[in-house]
Image (cartoon, rainbow, N blue to C red; front, side, top):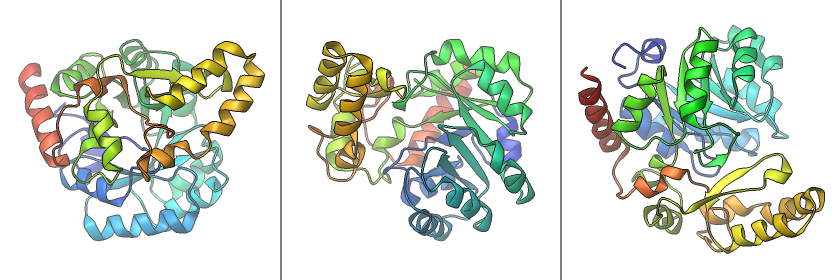
Length: 311
């Protein structure tokens, strides 16, 4: 991993990206990860361009290192955010929930690296074909929106299928996970759940507490019937959703889930309502046991990884 193409591409010390978590991945966390030698990311989510622009400007005040912007392509503001990335000259964009092809020419002309999140080999090949600089192979162990394949299965198949760097995501929380990703052929890793408890992460303390107290079996997949399944920590909201899924047909359940899920992430992340809110976290939440600075996390994980890899 000391010879990572992602490291060379951005001139960073460690081949690690911070996951793009809506309502969570802001300037404070992104700058902290970038200052620690990784690649921080601001999550655009469903926010309008002026809000995202403010976070980009704040990040620039906090770091002179490269950082990225995640664009959720289903957002009603996706076109505005895509252009904002060029105006603000972010180092790279990551994309999800859609096809970024219509923005590729604009981003490339602005010198922006494009790194889509992919849940399958077919999508990885498609993204390489339209000019992606790398892809993030995200397994279903991840928190938030997920696909159908595990990181262990997905990563090596994507590595074999494309010629661009592959970043492994999902189920990684320490140096062992980083070393395993490397052995699967990944050039770098992306972590989200681990950074939820970084001291620089501004998510509500009750959200952090729930992650820190989680066990190995405390996450659950909800909303598969909607076509956009989500991995979250168990709470009364997830029980309500799972009940709907078991008692109703898919179409009816999806409609009800969309209603009760609207605004649920913000409720948990910003207001600290971990009863009625959506506490998105990955399956490795049970391994996340202490708060640290982003710098402490990254240095500790890579010290272990390099020792295991003999680098």
